[in-house]
Amino acid sequence: MDKISQLKKKIIQTLDSNKALDIIDIDLANKSSMADFMIIASGTSSRHIQALSEQVLDIFKKNGVINCKIEGKNSNDWKLIDGIDLIVHIFNPEKRKFYELEKIWSELIPKEKVII
Image 1 (tube, rainbow, N blue to C red):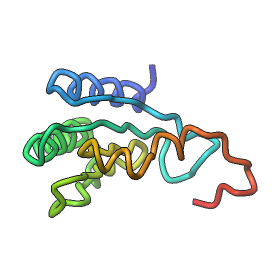
Image 2 (cartoon, helix red, strand yellow):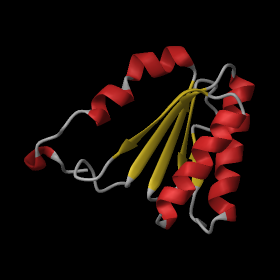
Image 3 (spheres, rainbow, N blue to C red):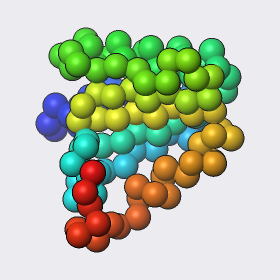
């Protein structure tokens, strides 16, 4: 198992053991050059979302991803943890349903439309 797959597994386990809801991972290969994988999960409150995002950031840093950061620090509804090759979104359930990232990124995208 390669390093990014092991990191993805650790993050999913951490999210799951800390009661994140509806955790999914999406393979972005052949869909985008911005990352290899995306993980999407939901938190139950703004504090839960914040705590989950900080735990994910800590995992990235402990595994040598030094340029990682949390986007949406002032948001109560959403956090994005940018781990370079692995992106983690943690939403409040209503915002997650509104943005439908799973639907957007799970669909096959023709190569000529992939410009990100």
